[in-house]
Image 1 (spheres, helix red, strand yellow):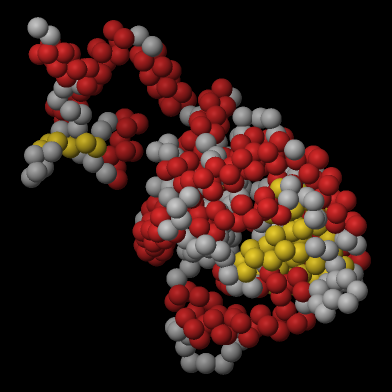
Image 2 (cartoon, helix red, strand yellow):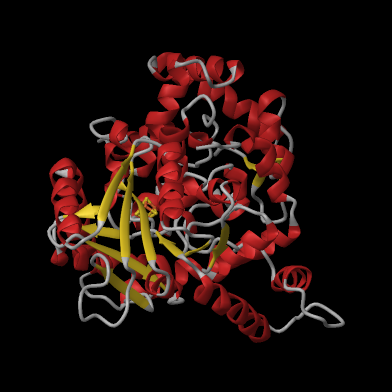
Length: 479
Ligand code: SF4
């Protein structure tokens, strides 16, 4: 998995001053938490549903080897084929091999983060296939030559005007100016994509879940494009991670109950399709050839590691939508297809810590991500684990390491803790200025701390520490 995550500080700086991006992120900041909150409030037992979903995912990951073998037997029994890919290169070789064997030229895809992770489109295009993304957001960024900036809304960073310009430049339609009406653009994309669907030889989808005992793949979309991609071409290839498997249909149903509510604030997505192998005798529709490519690409290394819990992720995006860092800088700053808190844990696991050590730092550890995660992943604890590893491997900058060691020394010694915090409080309050409401602020800090006040003021520390207030209170109460 290629990544530019080590440019996170520079990319984040650029994102913060990008007015167009900031306008798009404003929607995420305000709208997404509201719609999730409304959807979960309408559900009396949402907390219990989440507990059940977390238990199912925990049990499934604990029995991954057995469930995957059961899944494989069920797919083969239905006439399909299962392929195991150790890494992204092997997965792309398997998919291009299937396309070659079926004599394909044109490939259509529905949105799949695993295919983004393994850079499948680039591999298919190098091999000479014409690839078309059919999720509207993915189609837009494919035309623009960009990467997704959100795992559910890949073109979140693109404005309506930019979509109009892109369609104007790429669709070859004679007109005086780019379209500006959203409905007109939607119909235009639909017309273009309809022909691609009808001409396609191979349809590639991801899978939200795999069901071991039936061999089913569950594919959830809001546009219905995945259904056309899997039904119209002669060959359907499902490309997905090995961690997506659950034991049974009721287990899948329990996960689906929390997925759409967490992702889009709805009880269900518009389309939830269960696929079970190729077209059978007497069936009116479906592909003649059916393949499932199970991608490892670092996932089995996470089993039993401190990052084991991350394998429970159902890619709902709630942690992105509630993260103060993601909603400030957007997905591209992370330099990875996986962004936000889940990306800051997954990307180092897939791409290696030396190339990604900035990402676990891109968190305030406020805990909102863990609070909204429907499968109970302790994201802040996992981010701290990566930080500890980066520290142990001397990947964090020298100044930061010295500062952390000094902080560690002071925090372990009560005398020094009291002395240093008292001195720091006196100095900072001395540098502070009072605003019209009487609150004290520090406008500029020296040295490495200057980065904080370059973009915001720092509230001055309180005049008295918690410990001194506590002592005073006890003294007043004692007889
Ligand atoms: S970590 Fe949790 S909240 Fe984030 S995408 Fe995964 S399941 Fe959703």
